[in-house]
Length: 353
Image (tube, rainbow, N blue to C red; front, side, top):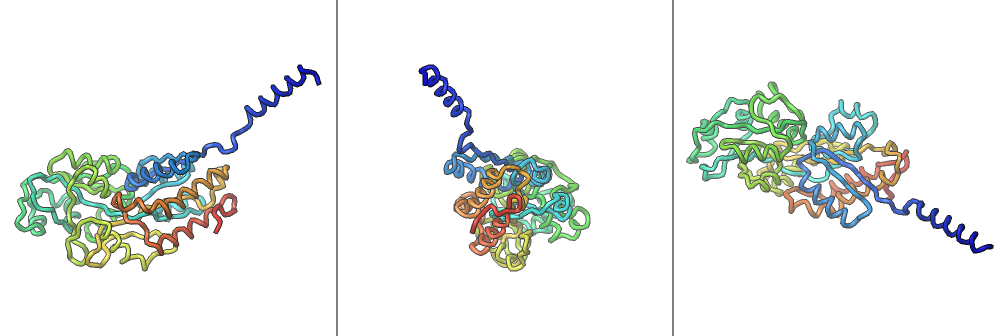
């Protein structure tokens, strides 16, 4: 073999090596939806990306309604939602989906009343009256009766609510429908409703901004947004007639009160349960995926999506309480993990026992 031929062969081999695909190319996973879960989702992604640098995860907090819409359009791999999909949405999905509760958390009533030195106490009927517009000032007798001796100002109430489809809205309006017949008949429960009064903000951060910047405002947000915004939160009178501050223990107590009625698909609200320590406005936030991920045409992407969700339900649970979420109990977590094992790619299980 001539020297020239050897050089040519070596050069060809070099070109083949240069254009050979990488053995472990990065996998990109896209999720979108709930703003309720955004604080802990950011933490999960940060830690998981550190542990798995070959997996890139992006999550857009566009609201639960947007997440479900994008999942149905198959432009993302998983949706985050505080509202389970409705029967109509399940039909529109065109194939089976899995609802996977990941954590639970409280929806809180935050307000802007600098002159009020006491913690505000509210009950369901009063909150419904405020959001119906029938209670319009802070010194209304119904609010005063729940806050004896408090310095309630003669100040108009500005109601803040979500402007887009939201699972937090679904939880909140479900609570109002449970405690107020007027709300149930006139407005009802949904991710997006026709609000009788108030100003809309995009995302929980948008609602929190309205409250923070407007004297006399009140709104519903996920607890982490109230804490991050340094906003006061009201104590809520629960079904047992006891004022309860939002807390992880209160959410756990509420979850325990309803878990006996847990349906097979996990679509269960945690609103206004019995129990002296139960916080009345709580909810699961869900990871939602198609049961069969064959539509992705990429088994590695499907596998890495399911592995990320499995990590959230196991190692990721340790980050919940530090960000004001309630982690799943052992029995609940095991049931959800069993559900995740139903995920397939072209009919073949993605996770092994």
